Length: 75
Image (tube, rainbow, N blue to C red):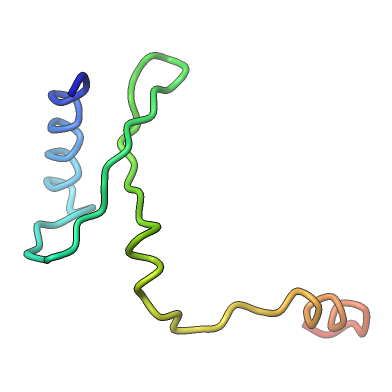
């Protein structure tokens, strides 16, 4: 992996800052490295697989209902 050292550094920084924490799980989401315009990299998590397994706690609003409420002056 070309960005291995930088990925490890960023993960270490996030662990130290409490942004992420170590967990034991059978599910792993892949990391994706994105090169920024300034040449640095951004470490991203591809959570699409995990998101498809998790139930929504709140149903997202229906766009048609939202538009109807806006027309009636309700939120």
